Length: 403
Image (tube, rainbow, N blue to C red):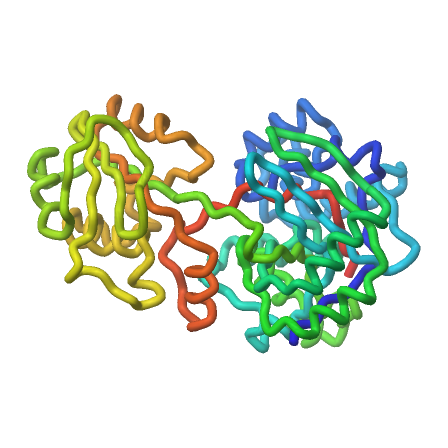
């Protein structure tokens, strides 16, 4: 069983929710965040990326940055931009984008569940990013960014969510960049009970924020300053059958030591290669589209190269092993400057035009499935970098949890 818990949410008023809501802190850099906040002075990026509030250049890990974030939260509360619900609640966060309709619950998840591996991971974290969010949580004393979790859907939970949508208080309702965001506040007890029959939840997005919340929990426990709120982290939990993973494509900027023609010849050692007239999406697992030398190719992995291993069978792992490591010698995809990752929200034309202008090759992958993600996590394994691009993204600033 996993523990989910209602909480007294600190959240924007319905009138201010659209102005405050912002993209996650880690999908924009400081310059981009500053431009967004200039256009919208209430943007939550002023809190999540508080370095943008300083005129002088300042390191984003300077303690003054986190103190500024804390000051702004309290200012937003004092000015009535945020309110605190009087009773513990669970919230429903509904998003609609193209053919995707996902309805998750906003609640607290247990830090002990994470430590007991009932909250399962599929990604390693980077120490520098952990330190940043750990300091942000500890100094502000707030969880500001919910962790995007998944669970294997259960009929009773889905029914309770639908009932909550019918009867709950609507707390925000707005559209941004083609995504409709709607939130509801409901009584928490029924869902708290129903989740006791869920064996595990899975991190879809937010590994660094989650590990940072755990760091604060363990730090405060060791320092004997643990509060009840420190034992939980803010989460949005969606059923796996409602979420959408887009492909995470790749560009290689330099094919050396091979010419474009030689590179295609090397691909034929691993794939059945067919020249095609124009771009087309991959047609299934172990199939990809490659653009090189102003020509499109459909490549199908040869049978003797296929694996059933939870990680090695991922299309991103196949491409890393054969195309990048074996052929091009790109052994560290996180660090090698020849390799660029392109999130699936970008149209194929972006990568195609870049290759036309700069050379190299573009690789369009079959998207990782949700079941593949869960299977990797269930086996306590780690995915290669940049395997999943979830869309739509959660907005930050709609829910805060005071520790």
